[in-house]
Amino acid sequence: MKVWYIAVKDLAVRTRDRTAFVTLLLVPMVMIIVLGSVFNWNATSFQAHAVVVDLDDSALSRQLTQQVFASAGARDVLALTTASSEQDARTLVEQGRTAAAVIIPMGFGASVTSGAAAHIEVLENPESLIQAGVVANIVQAYTTELQARRVAISVATSVLGESGAVPVERMGEAVQDTLEQAGSGRSQDLIAVKTTALEGRKVVPALDYYAVGMSLMYLIFTANEGAWDMLEERRQRTLARIMTTPTSRLTVMAGKFLGTLAITALQFAIIILLTRLLYHVQWSTSLPALLLMAGASVLAAAGLSTVVAALVKSGDQQGALGPAVALIYSLLGGSMWPVYVMPTWLNTASRLTFTRWAIDGFTALMLGGGLSSVLLPAGVCLGMAVVFVAVSAVALGRNA
Image 1 (cartoon, rainbow, N blue to C red):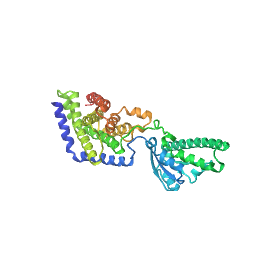
Image 2 (image 1 turned 180 degrees about the vertical axis):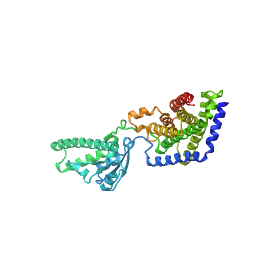
Image 3 (image 1 turned 60 degrees about the vertical axis):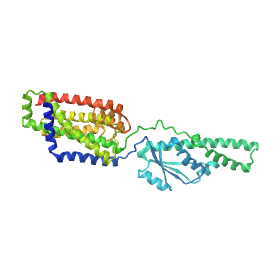
Image 4 (image 1 turned 45 degrees about the vertical axis):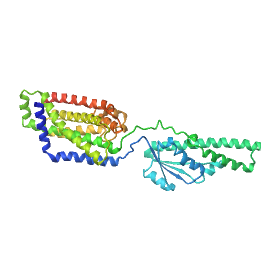
């Protein structure tokens, strides 16, 4: 019962400051919508954005724009728009609004038919070289195949001409007919676009991702407020008097832990509800899985706050250590930027934080995962919570 009394007392003290509590709800809600809007990436697999300008409008240019680019394989990795002029396409690339522009010049089809030099220009955005490279590779594969067909047709027509099977005056017409028949074939017979190496991991929308990231960051800030209560009790010697009673260090820390747990759980539940209603964030289709992951995250955040509370000895120390821990966890754990864009060493280091595991768990749920998908991340968060409470109990015994 002592644990319960300590927890209820701390909860009552914390809820008296309604302004602070409301602020810790409003700030993350604002941060979620701002970051989710600014970093508005696609919630699907990898896609290369490009604009196409067909100034030729020949059978061969239409084959590229209407068959190759529209084939089932290409559609998986391409997001195409059209432009009416080369200048418009160049402007889109220069402004960073698209990764690449494919310019099919006037006379392309005629040049291919006559055997003259022909080219297709691909303008690349230097800030999106991977996407631009995808577009360039598809165009290069098309032109290579077209060149091979042109050589084959050239050889065939030469043989036909020498044999006299086709009159010389009809040779140009025969070449044109052959190319057009080749161009009218199914696109997958012309070119096969392999997307395996370019297939990116599926990611949640930016708004959903930052709903998780900002919620976890401010969860730590809220939990750290419990350190102020413990510092005040130390200053007033209340904590020292409690430790002289038949109350173990573990009981005191468990009570402090439960009080912080209650306030952080309330905050997290409200944020989940508000983001679902206002921002339409799809947290999970499985309520048990969501409750498990949320509960494990709250326990880990509350446990981390008890460590901070047990280690600091003054308000100045808490004012420096508490926000520093929250920011480091946010930066390292992926609250500020997506974990899948981290370099390898940072990706590995981020797994030392419960926020990284929590983000992995929540994003797995957002992508349609069930209870089994969060067993590992939830288990790691729960394990970290136990370690945090044990460490804080030892530290409190030395500093009380």
